[in-house]
Amino acid sequence: MRDEVYEHLRRAVLDGELVPGERLGEAELCERLGVSRTPIREALMRLTQDGLLVAEANKGVRVRRVSAAEAQGAYVVREELDGLGAALAATAHTPADAEALRGALAALGAATPGDYREQTRLDLAFHRAITQASHNAALADLARDLEQRVALIKHQTRTYNAHPGTGAQHAALLDAILARDALSAREAARAHVRTFAALVLRDLGEHHD
Image (cartoon, rainbow, N blue to C red; front, side, top):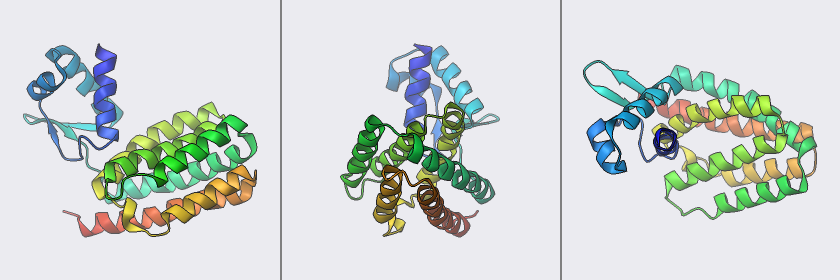
């Protein structure tokens, strides 16, 4: 039960059901999930340790908001990790991986227009599929932690639809991976990250408190 509650709340944050800045009350969560306070309290503690929530004295916990400086740091790392993951996927992917990658991008392309949460969930799933296709366990561990930060940033800034070239960038990235062109795949991934890093930082700068 404890792990199920933790994973449910973790997914709610990563999928944008619980948004950055939202306060989480134990009583409300108990009623929503139909469980006692103990697994709720333990899950909130684990999510705080994960960096998804932040505890405030006498105010409980809320979904963590990300500063412009933290976002900049996260995207610097993401550019390198995504570039490496794409290059490795280009050389290591299997036929099953290729099918999964095509399916993930097709699902993203079919996402409901205007449904930001769905688009973000499917976007993260596509990039996760690239990491999986790299068949590198160390990279997968690093990418999982970074994905949590990126999810918070995406739900805070809602920049997914802010660039008309998203679809073309994803297609170019997938084409390079499937062509086993590691150099092009690396650069396509890095260019894609740089595009959205600029949008995110602009948005966070405009909404800085």
